[in-house]
Image (cartoon, rainbow, N blue to C red):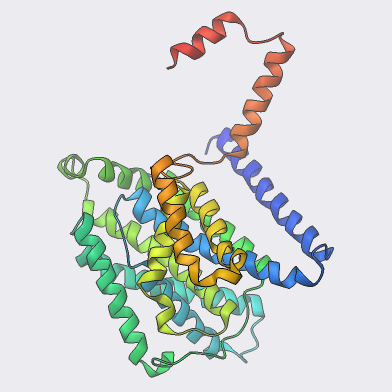
Length: 344
């Protein structure tokens, strides 16, 4: 790995750590008073929503295919992790270890489901794939409504509350980092090549189905991890929580933030997951608010608020340093201005 890349990773990690320390300072100083736990709850909701939305962006942004059944993978992860944590309760495991094992189990269960769904479904494209993913999500939901281990059509309750915000923050950061590295890897670049020209990629010898199923499985795995955090935060759930409208909410957050941008997924998920709390007095109009925001974004920013742009703390520091050098030299030299213009 190049030294410059290592430095960029270290700087971005320090940025993530700085944000975490800011949250710790705000919450531990009780600056919000009695509302501290309430705000921590909103932040926890934002954490698991970010994981779900970023994982969906792997399919929609990186792979270029629409999936309207992402809630199905979230539900598999949620129920699998809840069952595993319930089975391991009383075994003497620390809460954090129990939580991580449950999340891993939820992610693996969702990943296996992603393989089973992806192999037949990803031979289709466009609208046909979207319809098939909806069908599979409904099949999963109906199965959970009829399995006794998941409570049938009733509420599955008594789940351990393990989703502490501080843990969830680092789990979210780790998941987003892994997804970012996947997109930057040869697997991600290959999937993007398939997205840009399916026929050319296939003709050049790329196993299109393999790479699409792999990306779909990775997305399903992280959706399952997000579902596991959801289950251990809510402590109770019912299959109807993971219906088509939940998939539509996740997709709208991807589109609003920016298709193909993990930064957009983070901002879009954080904002829209907090929107119901901002509109608590008008909760029945939540989907109306989503629709209005989506329409406005599609009119003025068809590619989403961030498009395919990614935030980089290293890039910002580099630009600030460059401007500092230019000021020290007495402004931008004429030949540098011509060089900038020639780039466009």
